[in-house]
Amino acid sequence: MDAPLWRERPLPPPSHDQLPTWDWPLQQVADLTRSRNDLRARVLGAGTPPGDIADDVERLLLAYEELASNAFRHGQPPVRAMVTAGGDGWLIDVTDASVDRAPTPAVDRDPALGGLGLHLIARLCRAYGWSTSSGRKHVWGHVSLAPVA
Image 1 (spheres, helix red, strand yellow):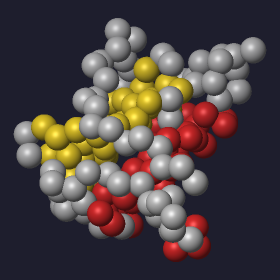
Image 2 (tube, helix red, strand yellow; image 1 turned 135 degrees about the vertical axis):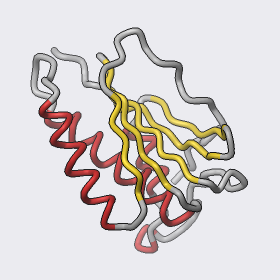
Image 3 (cartoon, helix red, strand yellow; image 1 turned 135 degrees about the horizontal axis):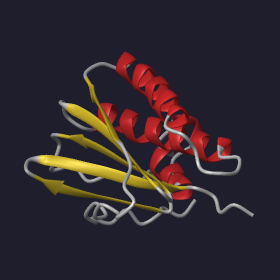
């Protein structure tokens, strides 16, 4: 599998149609499940655009879980996850204190050994990247709403 290019790229600027931002401090692995369930409830409770977005919400939740769990495995505490809703999708921004470790996709690894999360993010997200700011590493992805046909 070819490794997607995980370049250092700043977070996209806020969009003019930015909606709520939700955030969670993630102190233990159990917080991942709680925050994912909370994210689902908040997205579905915020009102949804016309059309069936069930697949989009599932892509959001999977991307969120991959980025947040990577911060636990490869980053340094404290870990914080933020999701900002917009008219065209959601921006996930997961931060940790490991500013000296760039996200590195696994290459030539047996898929049974894991390490495919960054490859998955590259497929689920319209845009993705990472940057450092104020002593924090930001690893982010933008999950788009599928166009309504």
